[in-house]
Length: 335
Image (cartoon, rainbow, N blue to C red; front, top):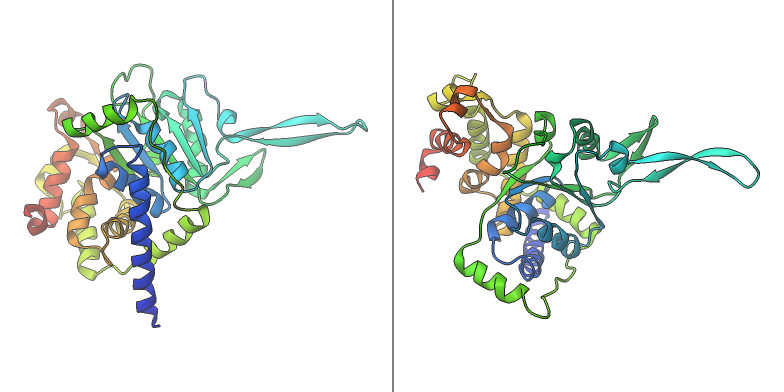
């Protein structure tokens, strides 16, 4: 079997397995297919996701279900203003042996898992938020000068409440950039909410089954990176990312007038990965320009900032991204 035929077979087999995983997830997290696809995309790309939604929309339930379905060792940390870095990373304690000798022993914190849920991450202080930076980027933590690698795969799915901003600390730009995608969790439609009521208020609730293992997820991440990307898609990614930078000559007028800063090269890397995952989840062998348009907002939204004047005019980042997409890919945006 040729290398190309072997890759096609692997992609098709993985697509079937992902369909089973989505079916298992939606038994507990009903509806919201877009949210499920984006979250799975983050895991397939080996990245982290920032879930933003109002209380009671099932964000915690989704992460818990993902931990089961993807066969990952999960942990949950409720971020609060008094949470300290050691509460996440762990710490060294001085122990006395029976012979009287003393030595430090490292006690691992909850970050030593494979799927960490950082609940209401913006409620912790910047010092605690920054404790996750090294773990998210380098997949290791340093305690007392010694590096402790995290068990692969390692993913962070953080939640954030868009209301009640009093007493919260906005995530720094460097940490926002570490999240592969921002996943907005909307209210369910009426039919979905009807199904949720029937499924969750009875004596028994549907259970999810394990579909993947940690090793299989790592193998799937390798398959995603081997998926071919056409030159037209690569150029569209570059055109779109560069069109979102206010200091670039190719940026449209709305971008230059409303944005303080735009996405960097890491955003283009994220788009290159997520469009592959999007194609895979939809049963296709390679990404298309439509995938770039579909993934533009989740990948770019948290990597851009409006100017003070634009915020005062209630300009929405979604509108700016839509204008940049129309500028970079007018035919796909119209479609």
